[in-house]
Length: 196
Image 1 (cartoon, rainbow, N blue to C red):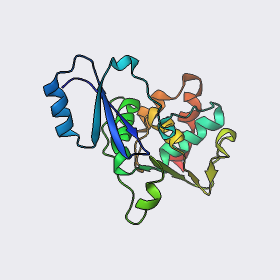
Image 2 (image 1 turned 180 degrees about the vertical axis):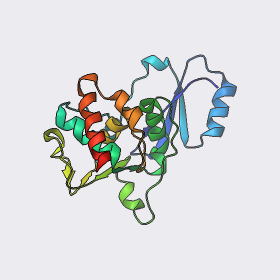
Image 3 (image 1 turned 90 degrees about the vertical axis):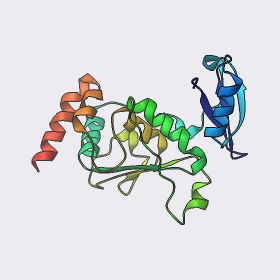
């Protein structure tokens, strides 16, 4: 199957795919069979295909300082990283996770029972939970409330650093992705937290 990209038109609750111009009709028919949520297929040069990316797929930029390195060490040691989305957005989330994580596959959970109506209002949501005693860096304080940050852009920034969904993180993988000038601070904080 040729490479393709899927984009969503949320107001209509449907999806469209952009495939390379040289895609055969048989390959397009197979695409439609495998992904029934795709209502329209466009042929185009993929590199030139332009669409507005949903805001909840944007990766937040972390402002690095010692407090950020320490906070991320705290999250790597003891936190809960979670995201869910309505079914119409799951494929985009899975693709974004695959891209940012360096090839990790993640099946995106749907919203819990009873919250579907709320979930339909957004493309995806994130809940990063941590000890309310954690020192939150100044650049994130406006996002933190009662030991939680609920912002997809921050979730994606964590994924780019090697975080995965759940309560257990691969600290060595995360440490390798911390900028070199802050890695020692991160590792020292991890050692200190582990010894408690």
